[in-house]
Amino acid sequence: MTDRPLQDPQPLRRGAGLTAWRQIADSIEAAIAEGRYGPGEKLPSETQFAERFGVNRHTVRRAVAALSERGLVRATQGGGTFVEAKPLHYPIGPKTRFSEAMARVGREARGELIHSAEAEANPEVAEALGVKIGAPVLQLVTLHRADEVPISVARTWLPLPRFAGLDETYRRTGSLTRAYARHAVSDYSRLSTRISARTATADEAAHLDLAVGRVVLVIDSVNVNQRGQRIQATRSLFAADRVDLVIEP
Image (cartoon, rainbow, N blue to C red; front, top):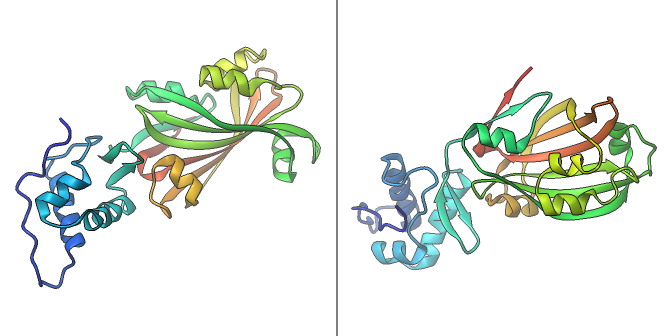
């Protein structure tokens, strides 16, 4: 059930030393904690909250921003504000596949190609792919969703001319596994994984529907094909509040 008015919020305490936006944020947080708004549920609009509390929309927007900064809600452009769902268990192992991982937890996965371009391998990418510095590579920027919630944004490098045209295949299929299959890669596995964390940039936060400055988990990985050849270097950024990483043997 969505777009319900807030049920019996505490009235604002004027002149009590606590700002109106803070009181509104506390009231919404209490409603979430009590289960009046469940994980993934859409909250009432800013206008509805403003009318209920007798304040302007700017005050409500500040309250929602504070909740977003704490990872309690997810504000989307033009789509409203949603209660953050419980973190997804995301396994990392030799056969990590985003679509399969999401299917295991009952979520529908979707990949989207944001950008692709031919580039020159920098020292880090060259080492990961086992090519010379400056060698041509195909760079993909992709966004991955589970039930339309952004989970990760990734930058992937593939050696050229081996994978020329793979970006268009990915654009049509939304799956790296299916794109690989059309480029004579029947299977691939993880060679290495490195995990770190940092704050999201403005662009990264926009892609993931995060407040600027929220923490993202950074996963640097290298994949090899069925013959053990290095075919992919990827840096994936996961919204830290939305996944629990599980390392599998």
